[in-house]
Length: 132
Image (tube, rainbow, N blue to C red; front, side, top):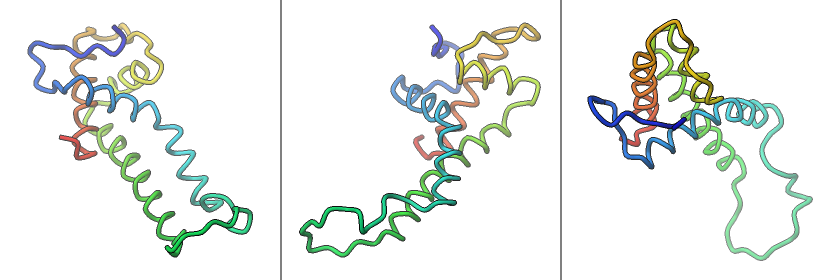
C-alpha cells in the first residue's frame, strides 16, 4: 500500500511500471547529488593506467563519457528539483517524506490532499524526464 497510486479521479495517473520507476528515481535523489558532486570533484572512473591492457580497435574518450554521465545525472536532479516547485511548500515536506521514507502523511491536512499532491509531483518528475 505504501506506493499506492489512486485509480479513480486521478488526472495524474501513470502506468504502474512508470509510476514505480519515477518513485525510485525520486528515492535516489540524495545519491544522485552525492554522485554528481563526487564526479565533479574527483573525476570519473579508475585511473587508466591501472586498467588491464585489453585489445580494442576503438579509441577511448573518457572526457566525453564523463560529460555524458554528468549530463544524465544533472537532468535527473533538475527534473526532481523542477517538480518540487509545482507543489506548495506546506505539502512538499509531507509528500517528500512519504516517498523517501514511506512514512505516513502529517495530520495537518486530509490524506487525500497529500495523495493528490504526491500524484502531481510524481507525474511532474516523469514529464520532466520526458518519459510521458
